[in-house]
Image (cartoon, rainbow, N blue to C red):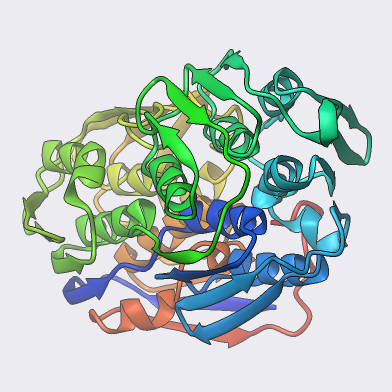
Length: 432
């Protein structure tokens, strides 16, 4: 096991280049199973979730070739199994995309129940609803068993209305429908950038998907997806995390390789707090020199403020001059990290899904842990701003979603290192 050691209290200056989007990559890699040929995927982030998916795909018979640190070729012509039951499958939430991909191409899938960060109940009922509407029989026990019951074990197009706006269900059902016979219309869809990216990937391989990024997605099923090359979009949440880092510490960062439109929901809140944000073609200049102002934040599906940025912005608001509120409208238990933030000196009270934050003048270093991926990022942001030394344990969560975070932060002036802790015990929920 490892810990991050941060000697904080110093502003950040310089440039940071953002990696490919984690939330897009972990769907596009399983979607490569649908391609009857070789697909080359570029701008892949070097993170542990990606590495696990490579191993899972190889176990199904795919040929996975890493061309360089950020490029992979996946050849799924030699798939030998539609059963993804390796214990690795249970370590990441995104493994549920294997269901839609395998079911869509082969008409059957058996996939172990997904794992991931534990910050609330995350059912897959909307995924199952969509699969059944497309003509699959679905059983759930320790695994999800799905099988097309139509002619030739092929799914059939359908009209599907999602009861809740679900990113995972939108993407999973879209994959399954891409090779279904006929036309599928999915309504009440999520609109996140990585949904559009998945649709663009599938279209580049021969799918016919229109409307991704809107409430309604229309899919005309095709018989076969063929090979091609695709480049993943930049990571909105990684970029937002570095924006909150400079907001917490002060200084100035040029954040490169971003799509500024994707960042608007984050930029607006930081500007309300007194942070300077300037948009350019594919970069953001972020600067904070004065005091932080309080504001109120409520997480919402895109284009609202992303739930994956809630812990990071809460860490910044805890340093603002006044009272702020953060309302979590997506997940039921995403405030577990608040007790860790309090160890650094934050003054926060949580009532159900609302946190009331009274800003303090400064944080003080402490030993904290990463409760999940984004909570871990919040601890890094807070530790960078804290006076003294902060130790962060359970950093395997952070490395699920942030490529080379230590060196990226060092390059802009952070005093952060990683140390080996041989005997640190794992908590029961550390399967993320």
